[in-house]
Length: 405
Image 1 (cartoon, helix red, strand yellow):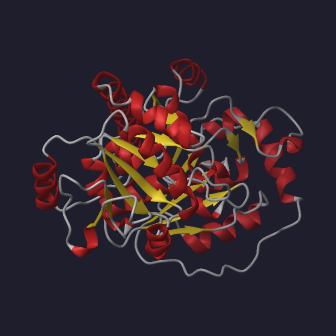
Image 2 (cartoon, one colour):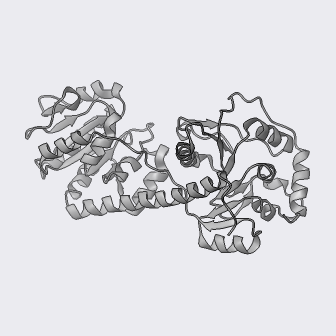
Image 3 (cartoon, helix red, strand yellow):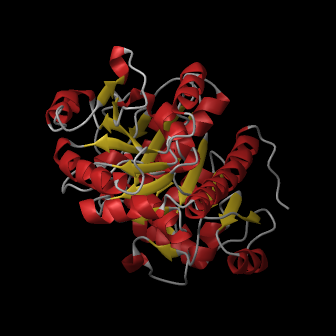
């Protein structure tokens, strides 16, 4: 690999920086370890999901380690992922980190580079860079000579760029040892929600073409708005059935208390009830069967989004199963996913009972409903294509099969 005066100067400066390493509190797991680094902590969840998918494909013994420039939000750290503070750029800290964790592969997401960390990792393991964009140094003030970015990029085995122009530019300036390919933008993938096939078939037979909408992950404080919207929609679609699922099982009684029994005819799924012709609300106490309800309902209001502080729930779950998505404004925990779906026309924001009722009435038109469902499926398909490409390259790198093009 060509020598770089800029990189050498950067590494020399890094050696003079104070060490900041702390004792490791998590034991290094046995087996393969995939190391993921996220330049933007807000995107840690998407990267963690990628790592978990790879761990599932490789073996039960594979684990996932994620580092980031700063601590990612708690909701961005799924179970099964080890989060560790990223070492400083002092080479002694970097070597201590690598000696302890002994990763088998590094996948770096984002354009903010750490040359000392990348160079040291590349001497031990294959490294992949996703979405490099316009690369920059994370510690811009450390540049004391020529720019070390090009030399740092040359230490990656594979670079998957999110724009064709970036692919062309990198291929012209980087070593032939770097495999630069078009990639795309890594985004969250919907989890695979299971269901009981016989339950879905029986419900479809019982409902016999009756229109259905779902209020999923409902917070108790959202129930009055849901019922007001439902009452308004019933004026134009009197056979409309509402399925209500609480955000958590412990909310079940609180939701029941907000459904006046003298106003509504309710069937309870967990008591073995099936909706009858006169049933208006089918109440399911546990959110564990969301795979069934999203498949049954062409329209889903994804709750915990009309009340402040809840942050919303994953909208990719219903979109992946063909359900049009309605949601409130409080969705900070999944803002990127909601934005993608809304921009594609697969999701629509509602702010109160009136706007929720209006959306339900508009989606009674089959063409509008079909358009939203199709748009959602396209978003999910694009996500899968990007993830599949990343996983394929990572598998080949782990197996020693990846070569430059």
